[in-house]
Length: 302
Image (cartoon, rainbow, N blue to C red):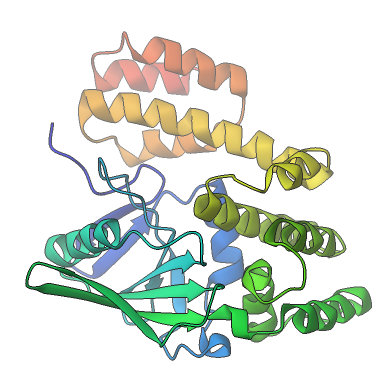
């Protein structure tokens, strides 16, 4: 079967009017709430503003990109993070970047956010005659403890975050701290718990834990995840994320059968929140052979 570059949750399609991203899921909604229209000027990157997060499907045997954003000029910003222990996988980065360039004709800008020893502004590797080079931004030069105090005062007073505040809070665990990364991450989680707006609080907790877990592979943040699951917002992340996972599993089964789905059926599936109904649909999907049978199943749910 031909490998699809598009992810179930956020499919990238080339159309007459340009590029469209569809199927915004739980995680994508929270990333977009924080990052949409955001500029990276605060950390020295002069790029167009962000339109939205992009989720790409895993390419077999290659590490998935940490973050990808669609920018205002319809180019892609690919972001990785590194420190002294965890170095970027240049081979995987190159494969994903080139797959976007070749398949969609889109420009890809790749940036590494570094919180280890200072770099010289660029980093790269040669693959035969091909030199793959990316820009490096040293987050470790930013005083994370000073940023923490500034954000803490704003949160306590109920002041609105400006653009730089949003960027700083999203990457605060990766700035310079006198404590370990795990301790800094937990400290940032506790700070976010003081944000009064529930949806804003949920968005930042989702974004930061997602970035940290993708980067570290869950190493060193188990205590933070355990803490989150005992909070109201943590339970919601777990609950909504589980439902989204069931929806995506069903869509994978159906797309394997039919290659494409009518929009009205896709909408019904992604809006269904009843776990028992979703589980029943997953069980029944294996025996469905036509779109008519599928419509009968999803539109007759009790």
